[in-house]
Image 1 (cartoon, one colour):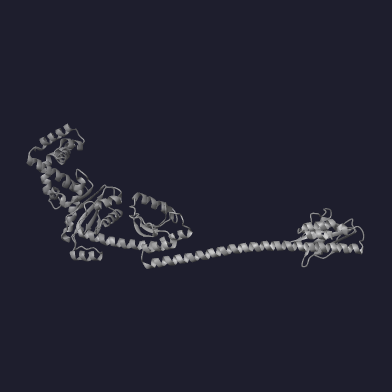
Image 2: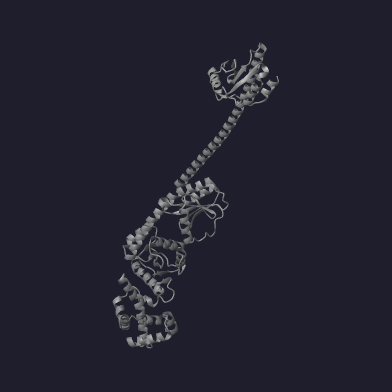
Amino acid sequence: MTLSSALFATLDEGEILGLAMDHIAAAGPYGAEAGYLTVDGALVPSRRNGQVHTGAVDRRVRELAGEDGPVTVPGLPRARALGLRGHERLHGYLVVTSRSRPTEAERSLLATLVRHTAAALSAAFAHRRRREDALELYRLREERTALQGQLISVVAELGYQRALHALMADVAASGRGEEAITRALHGLTGLPALVEDRFGRLRSWTGPDRPDPYPEPDPVRQDAMLCAVGRQAGPVRVKDRLVTLVRPHGEILGVLALVDARREADDHTLRALEDGAASLAPELAHLRNLAEVESKLHRELADDLLTGTDEASAYARSEAVGHDLHRRHYVVVVQWSNRTADGPFAQTVGRAASAVGMHSLLTRRSDHVVLVTDDRPHARALYEALARETGTRSGTIGVSTPCDSLADIPHRYQEAQRALEVRRHSRGEHYGTTFFDELGLYRILGPGNDYRELETFVHEWLGQLIDYDSRHRTAMVETLSQYFDCGGNYDETAEFLAIHRSTLRYRLQRIRDISGNDLADVEDRLNLQVATRVWKIVLGEQAGERRR
């Protein structure tokens, strides 16, 4: 009874087998030669088994295949393997030897001990199985919970993606452009959404806290930002914004951004921003293509107007591009010292003109951009706008007198060029805006004059000085021109020419000697001054054109 209690008090199969082997002698003249437990269908020897006859006993026990049977143990006349059987399975074996023939009572006690051991093993095996089943059930439940969570996440993600794609497709199909995209993004993310052009100017904003006025972009910083964002894949954080580029076929057409000052954006927000950029790309590309076609039509019309064209055709074409040529027009010529007159600079001039309210036809020449505009430009507005756009003030603008008819435009183009050249060659400020109708004397020297007559006049009054300069590599004509520009002031002229006052006096005396003209004589002085102006402004430019 005590042994039975001990057997059922433990749930360790090895300990149960060991207790049975230790106490088997209490049932009679018995000894425990070996013990085995069934583990995963195989008989595993107990650590208590002896080493002398282990191999032979092991083979015999396995040959019994679950049945009781005799076992040969050298030196012992009686040895038997007794199966430890449960309800549905064999739990192991006890290999029992006896020194003498046991009595009926001793055999009964041995059988009882074997049954109790088998029953205890059944209980232990059942408990272990329940524990393993419980652990497996727990594992399966945890796995099921994880799979359910993943499934829910995948379903939610797919649902979000379908909703997002459907929304962006509807937005793209609506044809409402940037505003529809920013409205949809703001609705999806709760964050302010905006579209800027590639130069940093706002095109659309949906959401609170819109800056008013919107900051004027810095061209250098804007280009640096575009390069930094373009080097990375997907949206990039730039200060308090998440920014992605809209660039179909690699060309940057604009910027789509979310204002995320609190850094609340998650993966869904980033995906919405990327999908928004993908939906916006065809819209901006379409607008770009339309703008290019319109720009080409404007440019072709402006080119024809500058060279002269049929009025009926010009009016019809202007109506097609939405420009009213029936109004009084001016020709404006723009040149910037650090910019070539290429496509990007022409676009810059067009944006600046639109920003100050000028309605224009635009084209470009080798070194300047030309605007045919329907109103007299403000004296400084266009220049200031271009200075902001380009980041430099080193630019010159010439403006013609008004065109009373389309046939006047070629001549007015020459006036605008003359105004620009006078400003560029002026003694004072070379940069700014000059109107042809404010040129005074320079209008007489303007386009339409006979250059041969002008050359004759200049040669009559300055020929000897020009020849002297050519032979001796001096600057007598330039000295005389600067002397007149400074109003006859010795100190100012010497300072401008970077020479000593006495050197200036010597040069002026040499000019009197060489030319035979008296600077104190009113007539001589006037003719010399006009001749130097013609030499500097008109013939100097003509010589440059000939060299080109």
